[in-house]
Image 1 (cartoon, rainbow, N blue to C red):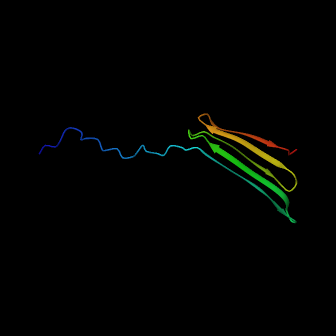
Image 2 (tube, rainbow, N blue to C red; image 1 turned 45 degrees about the horizontal axis):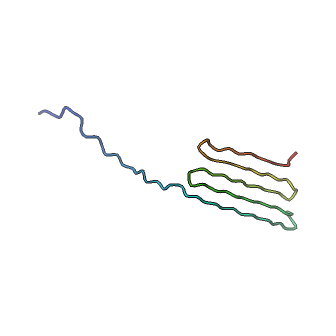
Image 3 (cartoon, rainbow, N blue to C red; image 1 turned 45 degrees about the vertical axis):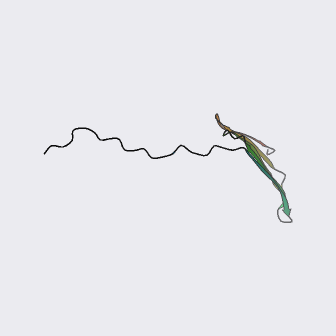
Length: 89
């Protein structure tokens, strides 16, 4: 008996290239609160995407002792970059 000497057809590739494209968006919130145990606090967040995969945003926090932290960030074709601002000593 003689068997085939060549290679068969390649296996079909499965998958798809129909991933959803990014769409522009924008969201944000501000929270202000406190009670007699924890004092006042504030938290904010804002972000927007341009529909091309680029995102810009920021978030911040002020605790009951007045310590604040703010992060401004960009995520795009050059990667993720953040700048942090605080009034901590």
